[in-house]
Image (cartoon, rainbow, N blue to C red; front, side, top):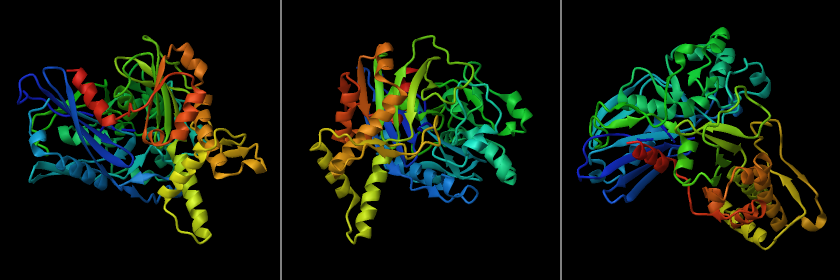
Length: 477
């Protein structure tokens, strides 16, 4: 379902003029559900609940490079999340429900069972989920794949690339499965009792080998290379309806409509971008800077693997220009972990939360530094082999404050190198909406954003894929 990372149900609302929409975000680390209620006066009220999935699983075939999750644990977290909602809220009559995520899963059905709050389902014969962070497809492997007829290059973590990897390295793995999709496509298919999964254009584009102009898979290219075409899902427009629920679900009535699962990034942007002159900067685990492309824009017909900017299908045939960096809050988390490990090796046991607080305070006391850090410890999709580096090292600038300031500066400069301020200016951007957990709690990052991008920056516009998914379905009634 839409997260990475959504809407369910329709019937007359209990209160005349009131519309209820439930959005679900199936993220990499947690599941979140948001209930959006629009009254006759146009007010929108939201309630939300989240649960960590703790679904990380070993990847026997891919080893340390693999990033897999247990689907059973994800669905368990989803059920717990919805069970935590006050039942009188979920037992309203509904308009729609949608969801999102950035993870892949091969699947075969589920098992429905009655519970105290209606029916719930448990996964049947499904594989592990292979997430967007999966690194099993090396650069040399990707270069051996056929050239896609698409404006997006194929990267590790993309669904089609992963299937190619299994074809080469473990072909027997694919034999028991007759369908593949994202985790949110799986949930939508189960809720609607679909014979085949249904995927939105947004998610299909992120799988690779999909032409967003013709809205079709590169079937000839895939067939000639021996790709199992029967695994690919059907594709529909974002904002469309996938079907209706054959059972009640956590009190949501049977017959409620379910929206086609959407892209988590697109829904996150939708939750906060209000003007076409807005740019959205989100720094959470990773980091993204995005601006809307002009109406009528069409991406190039062939991918540019060296380009730092990708064009993501949005809504109503429009596109977003996105600098999607793999290096955001995860870089700071890695630095904190390194410091904590060093302290442990020296015989001192410290909380990582304390380390984080102290390093930010030290950086706030250090307004500038000549120390330069390129923070790409996780590489970038357009430069997968690039590692991090530290230069301009002076003995006088090795304090915790200097290093932390340089690290935060490097994270923002890396984004700026991908999508420079001049490009924002040429696109007519008038303000930046800053969001994401890593940015909201880090005053040093905020200072570096404002130095690098001399535009008004509005904080507190936290992106929320679950709310965005609900809003999409609400506005498309």
